Each structure stands twice: as structure tokens, then as C-alpha cells.
Amino acid sequence: MDHSIPHRDAAADATALRHWAERTASGGFASLHLQSGLRADPQMLERAMARAPQALPGEIRLRQLGLQAYVPTWDAMRAFTATRLTTTPDEIWLVEHLPVYTLGQAGQAQHVLDAHGIDVVQTDRGGQVTYHGPGQAVVYVLMDLRRRHWMVRETVHRLEEAVIRTLARLGVVGVRRPGAPGIYLGAPHPRAGAKISALGLKVRNGCTYHGVAINVDMDLTPFAGINPCGFSGLDVVDLAQLGVHTRADAVGMCFATELAMLADTTPNTPPQA
Image (cartoon, rainbow, N blue to C red; front, side):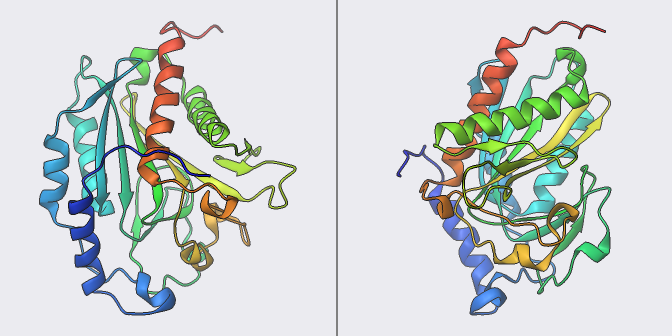
């Protein structure tokens, strides 16, 4: 099943991948090593952020950042959140990351079984440990919950709903799992229960950052080096394994559109008690 894709800065992505590959070992899992201190060209992120954002429903702006290192993008999210005003429009950032493991605030070191040289970053999002790499749609959601009168739990539910709707548009059934944020493959698929999307947020002064990751067409091998989201032996799947062949930026755009429509159709009124 093939799906159309939007334009992206392929030259910039190729440059980042070339710089990464020149500094990594060759063959198998070792080829995914991200050497300590390796970062994508910081000017790539600056150039991506300088481009005019796209307007979405729900008074949301969309930025497509392409392939980026994790830490500079995280720094940019924190800076945006720290300096935003009550009038600052909400934004969604679409990105793919160079290989990295991230530990959330609840993350425990024992859930990193063997990093195989891939950087491990202790971050400030909620949740446990996960992996990010090329071919995964990472969508950062920078929203003022106070202005929208959204509670944190409601926000998580909307993000999950946007993932479920995105997967449905691709012919895939996604379901929630009680007590385990994210989206999982639904029955009757033989791999029902496999995780296809992770979720983790940080809320500071009523504003969110971080967001969701949807596995599109990636090397899933590094997930074997961790207990994904703190669950030993958790099966992890991507869309390519399900016969859906598309690109991460296309899936990220679909998610952003679904979330924006949910925001646009949800009245910005205080929730009922």
C-alpha cells in the first residue's frame, strides 16, 4: 500500500545522514552507533526553524524540521516554552531523529539493557525509555492547555485519538492499553498488542512540549537493547511490517492534521465538573 508524501528538504536530510554514517561503525546493529558528542549540523535546525510555519485548523502552526539530532531539538522546545506568551500560537513540530535512546522522568537505568554505543539522554518528558531513529515520525506538541481549557489527561487522550485516526486512514487498527500510554496494534491482527506509537509529555506553566512517536519505516533492532516503555519483552512494530509503505513525514503530517481537527472541533470552554 503506497501513500503520497509531502515535500521535505531531502538534501539537508542526506547531509545529516552522511555526517552520521561517516562517524559510525559498519554492519548490523553496530552501524546504528551514534558516537558520543556527534550532533547534526546545528545550522540545519536553525534554518528549519526560520522557515515560515504552515497554518493548521485549531489556530495551530506546523513546522517541518526534517532529520535532526535530539538534544538541540529538545533545547529548542524548552526555549520556545520558556519564552512563549499567552498570545503565542500553539505549534506542532514534525521531526525525525538520529539514533538515540531517551529516558523519561520515570525512566530506570535497568531498562537500558545494552545501548550498543547509541547515546542515552535523560530527558524531562513523562514515561520510561524509548528509542528514536530515522524512519520514525516524531511529533512535538507545543500547546497552551490553559488557553484551550484542556486537562492533562484529556490532552493525552486527544493525542492518542489522533494516532488512532491516523492509523485508521492507513488501514491499521490502533488501540489504547490501560495503564500504558501510547497506541498498540489491535485485534484481530496476529501481532495484536505490539506497540506502534509511544507518547510522553512535559507540562510547564500550563504548556506542553514533547509529544508522540509513530513507527513508520525504521530499523527496529535498537528496541531490543531496551525494555520499551519499561515493559520487558514488549513487541514493537512499524507500518512497513504491516505492509503500509509511506514516509515518516507523511504520517507526521497526517497526525498533525488529525490533532488540529480535534482541537478545532473541541470548544475552548472549561471542562464540566
